Image 1: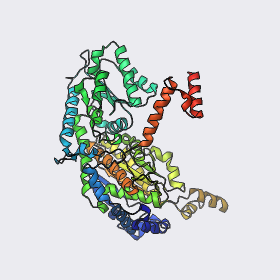
Image 2: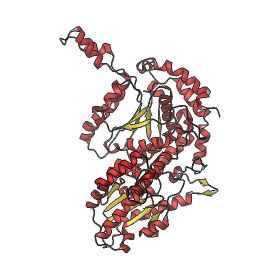
Image 3: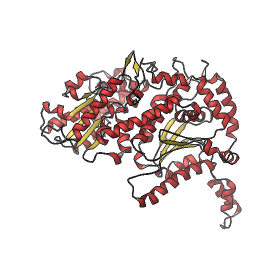
Image 4: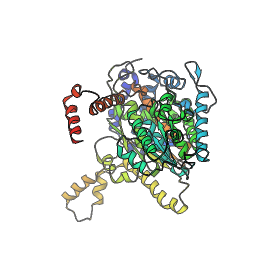
Length: 550
């Protein structure tokens, strides 16, 4: 396979880029009245309008040609069939098997993993029902009223964002809260609101040794015993999602309440596994299963749709276009729905941990841009802050707008006021970003204002907006478990496609591992188990200052 920047499609795209940069989307819409119809599609309950992108039919054709030149269809098949595409760790990437409802086997090392997947799902279902129907009770016989989910990274962010996004589906009698930060303030604040009699702790760590997660779990355990509970009572109030059964049992957990996690499930792709236990507890198992089925529907679309009608592929290739040919450094996610406000942070981890790399699969340095900076915020709040930069800066910033057409739990009056206003802002912003406002328009508006010619010229220049800012608009009928599952899977596959094009391993995270390793060593230095002489001068000085102040 040719080097990426030497492929025919890449060279052709380099030729198109300066031509497209001279075009304005206003003119693209004028010359093609059917543009919006041509550049939109439905998949898995989601509707994508990608017509407000700085692309022509020739550019799109070359982007799909690039995907074929990089053997994308074969790589998609390899992931779903259990090949060890995580080459630096020698692992398969089978989070899609966790939501496989096709009835077909998924093979890994000659063994069908689906019986194990379904067995774990049944275990999650049974435990969820035991908590909800109050057959699993605390050590004093009280029903569980609060769940504290302890994890970090993918073991924390996915379940937290899903339960936040699906707040209207929550089980009323049970409160689920999340703790990740090793900052003692967080766990202290949460424990202050708990009662040892009716609180359940779910500790999620594949190795049962993640520094932050283990320390928070140990602090929770110490608090629990300080409330008057005995060591034998730990088994009723602590459960684990982990591969390290021995460590969990040593902690005091019942082996029957340890939920397995396979080695082929990456952390940032793990909410579909038993890591999703807090989701099931918060929303009910039926809603958790609906989330999985929504993701499975997007998986089927991703595997089966031709590249030019494939939603994850289209979004990924547009991202390639902006990152590598149009000078974009970042990508903004803008959910126009309050409960989806945490989604940009979720995609930030998913995307930047996956493709924030500069080494090819063969260990060579890349000679092209890779993962963009992912950021964003909730509309309409963001319109009154960072949208200014998107509208008038000289940096290209592609945006994704996300919007539910209906919010069933709002009454009719709210639908016609709040939600109509929200829709008008969402659609109006995509229009404003695309169209902009010319100097001539601004100058005309200042006529008869009493300003001098010079003042009019100056003010018109300040008010001019170039437009031509690209955006995708993703619409769904309502945000329910199925549509959220499809939405998350869409971004997972988008990230995977871009990693395939850039020749990256999107499933390791050696930068994260380095931080963990050095953090553990510095902790040993702070606590006197290791000599600080091995650290650099700056780190030594910081450790000394901290210890002196402490």
